Length: 157
Image 1 (cartoon, helix red, strand yellow):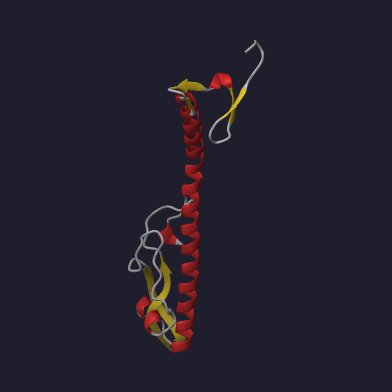
Image 2 (image 1 turned 60 degrees about the horizontal axis):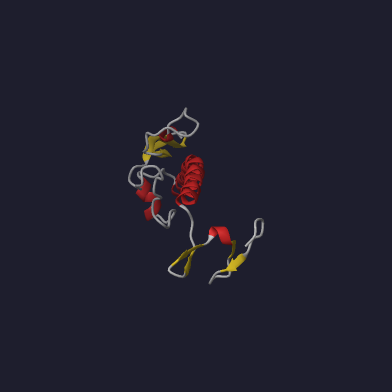
């Protein structure tokens, strides 16, 4: 073969490579990647993964925050509905479940992982000018963790 000429060889998988990249070993063509090529690809994948990981974790926390906001809104709304319907505030969050206001049971706090950690605020609720009854008026998360705004705790939401 002369200088400057390239002969192409078709392997068993119809891969076309120049003759200089093929090696003969016991009459068979050896096909594969060099260690340098493998390390380059692996390094590139690791760099990309390390760039994506922090934003993935932040997306998970923001999704939990959205679930917490929705759960708190729903429970506060149901506490108000219960108070208007029954003419007294609920004594516990379980009263909402027992009365059918929460059909699926108490929601799980996304930051504590339990439905038993909700913190309730109990106050006197005026039912008429002459009558008031103590009961739940608000609910908060049981988590002491700080939200992504880095100012407020989830327990103060």
